[in-house]
Image 1: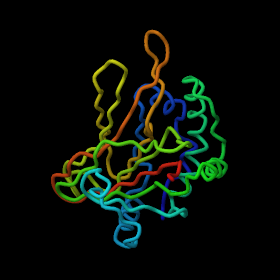
Image 2 (image 1 turned 120 degrees about the vertical axis):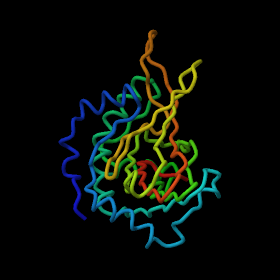
Image 3 (image 1 turned 30 degrees about the vertical axis):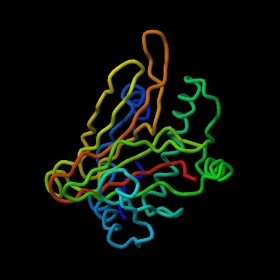
Length: 235
């Protein structure tokens, strides 16, 4: 696969960190070449039924998830290593601000050893495929003792051509306030770093924790395929 993952280290990480602090997400336009995005999308045609989970069975909407095993395809394996190394710095800053204790190791292999000790051995990274009238309900992947506060999503189909509708949506709940909705303007090959569940927010009286969930709105026409890269495993 042709991919621009070599450019991850050259991204504006100061700006990305600031955007994550302000909004809880940061869009990375064109991180995947369109050909690479479509090649990843075609994996939904070849992955075995053992990896496929209907969203309805988990009460998460309509459509299908295709879970990877421990060995991720290119370029996601590289994404997992390179993104984690950068994001662990931000994750540790957030932990220190919130005073939640714990420290994320600098290397994803060491972090996965912590997962295994906590009994978390099931990979959560997956492709999602939504057809007409399908949707992914608001949710967060925050179960378990070891939860990494950031994850990466990417769009592998072209809005307006392959599908209509199907916007990537996030909500943020601040204490004693209405939920704040956010729509991420993803295009084919775009990626985004998002908060997994909670993040620090600076208010007038200091920092406090805000809670985030994400979803995909109803697809009106066509087929939408995306990928979600989660750094911590599930039980």
